[in-house]
Length: 120
Image: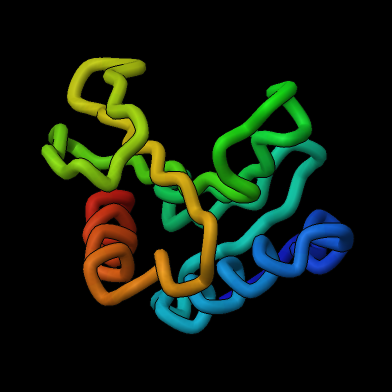
């Protein structure tokens, strides 16, 4: 796994975000690239499949400190997702609010790995 920019810098003021990023990085395949930009930390494998971002940078009163957005080939129906949208043909974005590291459980890791497989 390669990191082209430091997620530690992106999450400098958000310990939860860094912990979530570290948990996902540990669950990722070796060929996954983790990249931090000004707006998010992305996980890619040919194409981006997971994105961590801080809603407090964009929203006045966010409901969560961190959001994990997963790109999948199909919509998934789970009450855990805050929103599911279709930005393009055969691509569905699933937005999961993270309020605790416990939110990144086996089910979320499974969705993360599924998104990674589809990105190849």
